[in-house]
Length: 205
Image (cartoon, rainbow, N blue to C red; front, top):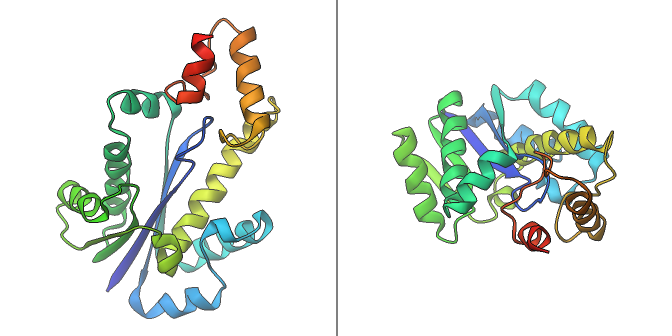
């Protein structure tokens, strides 16, 4: 049986892409993932994540990582369809990997509803959707590491030209950077999510 785990990184950021990653392995290899020390990416240091990233892609039967750019995110947020967008991209990952069963980390307050939405998009009834799946299932933890490392690489590329902090609205450095950018530039750069409320407030001032 081929098992898939899917997770995202960067959903709440003001800056950069939302990354969706999936990994698939045969059921008998699950215990070996545990032995690698794989955990929810948020519980690991950047150095450990990067080390595990390489081990994961070498070990799993298949993996797929995709990114959603800020323009697409903004368009869907304005239609109140961010969850639907994430479901669409998780379905894209699952269709690419063609597993027998998938475990996904739900962004919807109703995890069952989110799972059913992905099932409809994939014509696959074996979608298991849970809150905090990245902490509950090692296969989803592995996907969370791929998503987080890919997202971190995207932010590092932006750092080469911009001192923007982590990209999250909880980061004062990021908020200050975006505020100064909006104040001093005629157009907002395409790596900023203009639909986010803190950015909307800055644009109105």
